[in-house]
Image (cartoon, rainbow, N blue to C red; front, side, top):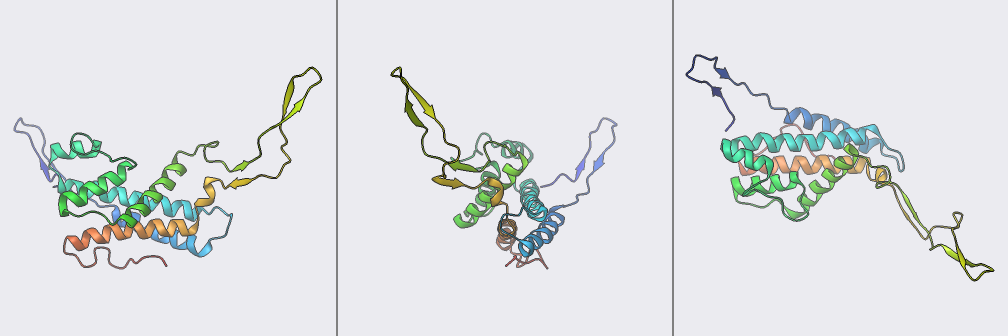
Length: 215
């Protein structure tokens, strides 16, 4: 459980902790900006509200995981869980956040998070990570063109010819087109569902009163 009181019997000062949960604040911001993004969504237009909503949603989930973990694990176990080492490791294809979520639900309640919900969480985390660590070339839009042509030369050799005016065979949209109002709303809904599901397993009918999914 969270540390409440620390003291040494060597004459040094003791510390009494008072805890401030930030999950609900993050969730409220996530709801406000994601709902706005969903209302204002316009194809091909990147909205600040979409980015902010996504960020706050994943921040709320990470804060939830970190807070809950202090109540699930003893101090020494908590370090291993936080670093995902020893008995707590990522499965193939899992992000660190998804791994921690899986471990927490299994450790405390002996259940697995719904697969569809986990997929939604994974997508939201992927969007957040790409926004946070944006890579210009990797996340660019791509025109898939026919292979370069060949032109025979007079000396028996040939040259490769690239025609940049040819129509692309396929267009791969840039990553940023995935950051929509709908994506922000879906991220918020997924995080809210995770937190509410944890509350129900704890015996709390509505662990996030006054906050509902974005439709």
